Image (cartoon, rainbow, N blue to C red; front, side, top):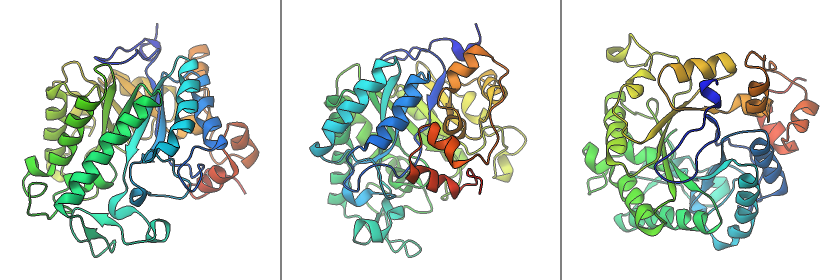
Length: 357
């Protein structure tokens, strides 16, 4: 059996039936109040039905002020539970692990959406963001934990903390963005404090079998690769998380920092001691050959975004024919609608060159 089709076990939670995870993709499809829409339900459950071993929601914001884009799924209110229950139940009915990604955009929250200045670890002139007080940081921590509890009560198998792409957790981790002088800023230990306190809180408040993952990115937003490697190793060594999701934009690229060039960015993480934690990658995995190569480089699973947009049943297509060729972009609007994207999602993907004129 091909490695990509083999089951994968975690310390906590159910097994994945294969090594394919659905990436948490921005899609602008839910309601303005964060309640799940039928369109987002269709998009996600089609991927679960299409064979993905794990189906992850788009970034779901844990505070109203943390909304990062229009039509974003919410997990900050009990009003969201009914829709989340419906979603988790349907994902799991297709033997796909159901994960809710927890998110807060921080300084990247558009003021015209949230109705006030966005927040950040420190005042940020570029994004016109204000610094959070220590009390607000503690409230932010607690709201991430409450969102995890809300996700579990809705039937999800686990959550992923979005610490990548310059969103709020990543902003705290960044030595360039985080200029705080309290216990949440300064040295690496302090900059990791918010993330670690959220992890500890989730482990305390959720059941013993509740899955927990973390997404990190190794570059951009003033992140330093050497520090991210340390963070990744400490997260895996702690045994408190079940999977680490490295979002690398291109899993086969070399690092941007000159001192680290000479080998693939991914290799800095595959060579770490991971214990029982499962390591995966995302970034430009567009077809079977890419997925197989990534797994051969030492990761435990692969995350598909673009490929999952174009083929809701990518895992089933691969199972039937390991050499199948994915369609090339751009594709027609009608093609994407048949693949379960809504009109809003198709419009959004037009910004990324997916839709032919």
